[in-house]
Length: 471
Picture 1 (cartoon, one colour):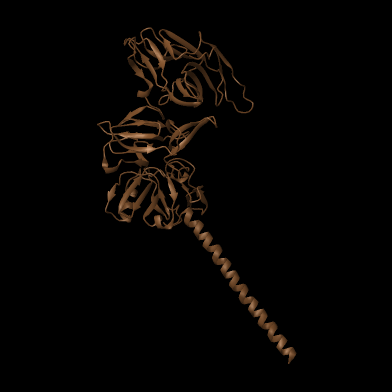
Picture 2: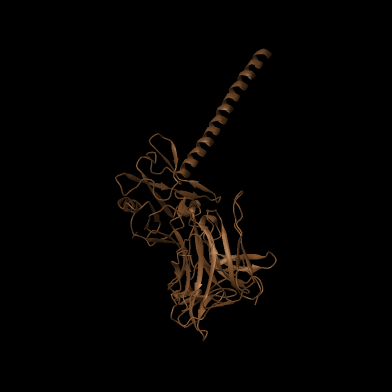
């Protein structure tokens, strides 16, 4: 066992002139890998809100070589409040948190208690419970942190009554198993949408969840349409099993080092496999599901296009004053199409969407597809494929520019307030760039031609004048 955590210093990461808060907390004895009932620990919460504040009291740790696992009671600045949570960290990476899906906000105090009857609880200053395991009366005797990073409550016979592995967050650890219908989730900042990594009967997929709709943007299917029962993270990759517990497929690591965890990024929504690099002293990626910026679902703001050079540009509309208005400013459609405002479909050439949904209609024309979106006030965009499939969207995200060959296979249309397309449905930000470029090139050619003609006329006049003088 390690002898650590006798006096815990909680550091705040405060910008510029913010004060550094030091929270000193005394824990009886040393940091072991288990805690017995009854147990109670309290962490102070700052009075004033400080952005990026993180305060932790480390309670337990495993005794393997670094990086090891540590369990901590944490207070973090979140959404202009302070959240109170029980966390598991692998080195400096948070791999599990009690507040992942529903943060528990508190003031003055953050209290963790393992009650005499075996219920693990988080409380505020008024002893109101904000999170609990619900294991009272089940014979729980201690809280234990296993070498796998699994936080468990066990009884006198070491039987597990509750475990963090049953409540996955955005990280899957080595040896952890996820059954069909379970998923990882992550939440991008300042967005109402969230990402999910889901195990289904016939595939593993990444989804962007927006409202009641789910849009896939990456998937992996075992060959021969074999069904999936569960997945498990091994040292060399994510292994997929059937109902007979036989391996049917694997997403392999691209490095020789043993894998430590799988993570779904909160920022990008990308899924990666990670190993620990002793030379760099940090975790590094050995596999990424998506390798291009433009393949990410939220690479650009709403009504933005990810170009071939991996930079974002706004879809631009023209208003009644003929001034350009950037479209990628706010999430959602700009016209409120479920109101009384009229709309029209703006076709964007050479672009598509990385988001996929089940087709709303098949064997229809492009005009019918556009009308389907027009008739649905919630629809803000439509994708028509060369296979005569029509896909309808309730958000304009994941739009990217493609080469001419791919662009000919589909047609992406955006619903805009009537009149803002400049009276021509084929107008768009990309098309305007083309028109400007063509205009510049045409002007240059005309200038060169006129210059050549002028030079020829002057030359002929001078030649005629010299011939006259000589005569």
